Length: 222
Image 1 (cartoon, rainbow, N blue to C red):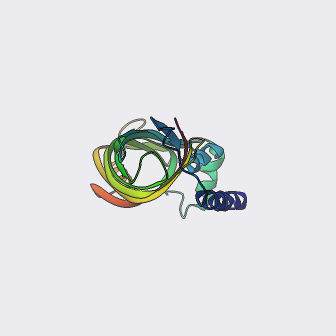
Image 2 (cartoon, one colour):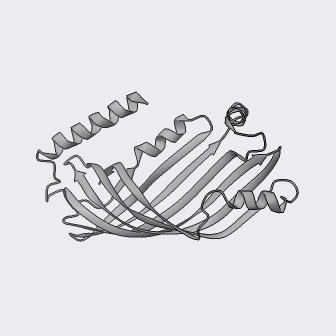
C-alpha cells in the first residue's frame, strides 16, 4: 500500500498549495448543485470479491445553508481460496468464519457554510437508514446475521471550491448507529441455540453504538 500512501500525500500537498491561491468561485458563477464521491471507498473494488461506493449530491439554498443526500454500498464475497486461508489462520477448526458481508445505506441532512459559493468551513447534521447482512460459516453451516439500522450524526470540516467547479471536502464527525430488527438464521435448517448465541455476540452487540467518522470527498460543482 506504499503507492497509495505516496499518492494521498501528494494529493494533500497539492490541495494545500492550491488553497493558498485564488481558489474561490467568483460571484458571477453561482453554484446550483454539486456531486462528490469518497475515492477511498472505491479501493474496495480492487479487492477480489469486493465492491464499494460512497457519494452524494448537495444543493445550496442561499448564502449559508445547503441540503445534501448520499448513498453508500459496501460488500465482500470471500472466494474458496480466501476462506481456506481464513481456516488456516483460525485458532481452531470450529471458529466462526465470515464468508460474505454487505451494507447499503442512505442519508440526508443540512450543512451550514460561511459561504456556499466559495471556499468555506462548514458544520452539519444528518439522519439515515440502511441494512447490514453478514454470512458466517461454521462446520459447513451457513448462518446469516441481518439487521436494519438508523443513523444520526454531526460533522464539520472544510470544503475547497475552485473556479473550474472542482471541489475537495475534508471533515470528521460523530455518528450514532441504532440497530433494529436483527434476524439470525441458517441458509438451510435452523441454527442451534449455541450457534445463534455465538453469531449474536459478533458485530454490533449494543442497540446503539457511537463512533467517529472521517469525510474525504472529491467532486464537481455546477
